[in-house]
Image (cartoon, rainbow, N blue to C red; front, side, top):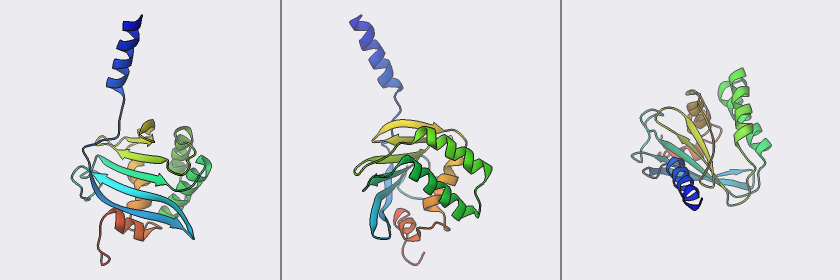
Length: 169
């Protein structure tokens, strides 16, 4: 029986998914709202540079939270940002929000939530380096990451920090 337990544990470890470790930091920054520091953000890619979603994958966006935030607030903020970027909330956005509601969790100060865009366009979410779940829709990754990386982002200072851009860009 003990051998079976050890074999199952080994197989589980071999199949466990993990955040890519062979990525390099592109940039990092602080996101604050009014006078509240909400999270530190870090962006990683294969070569430490940014060109576009396909050329830069795997891509990792890691958020380290500086305060408690509920899952409900996360999802509402995400939908608000899609509305900001696209001018409306589409049926697709609502479907993605439903998927996120099944994956995400509340966070507290010190927790990390990571979004990993893989070369096959799947997105995996990790909470404190443990896999929460994935979104397989290939159009989700760019739509989600545009919240931070689009030129139309509501946080242009953070975008410049994440992409390591000079203030003139």
